[in-house]
Length: 356
Image 1 (cartoon, rainbow, N blue to C red):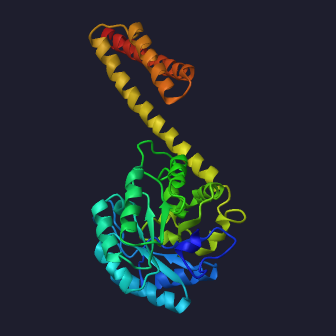
Image 2 (image 1 turned 90 degrees about the vertical axis):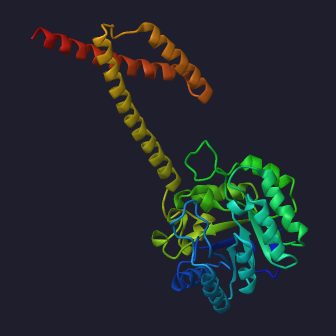
Image 3 (image 1 turned 30 degrees about the vertical axis):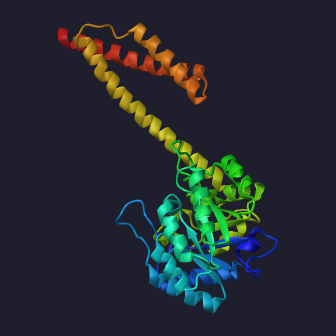
């Protein structure tokens, strides 16, 4: 289905087709060097952002129109197809002016029906390839609506990009791919090719391989990857970009980072453990204050009714989160015993001080 997006055989056959390039165009030298190395690695279609919609103002938001001029000049010299993100109707006009081979609608744009409509009007009837990323929230009607607005304006080369969704659950990945839900969405749109954007799903280059393998297993039509000639100095999304030469490792052979996914998981566990220790420290400070209050008001350190009520509620909460209530009870009884011992010790010390 990918050839319907890019006629003329510009994508490599055999392997999973890949569109790659830097998150953002930063300078003429940066975009040229990245494109040159991508071509050497067999990549024929390059993506790069001239405009970068950021969550908050003050961050680097792209170089704008001049970036497309630099990319167009490099593309003509190197014989590559190129595309950029369009966030406003004016961006679409500029993309047409610089003869972009494709554009994509970012997650924020897809979630704004009026903006999609205005961009579609600008592109009306063109032969441009348009890729539509999923919206930030898992609202599949918004995603479907963006496609339909483009189709109403006689745009026929349309594809989808899964870049993952922002959810309240959080976790190791930057954005949740919601694989099963997207599979269902794909089944209702079998005519639309879908690419996987492992860079935005993972948010961490060490996890790319794992996401790519899942996309391969689910028969995605291609990959949409962020690649920079020197990721560590990238002005946007540095942590999730890879050098062009590492792209082949996503499909063949071992990653140059070794067992990166396992390392990343362990680092995440270490962070959670550190957070737990910090929370235990905060809890200890609170129970110390409670012990002092009990002493002042002549209450015994052990309040059995309070303990059993606390254990009951913690067991119920553990069940809701799908973890062992017995383990949670054992853990909190240990924590309570240490807190109680500390309160009794402090109470004895205060009694000795009073006698002195």
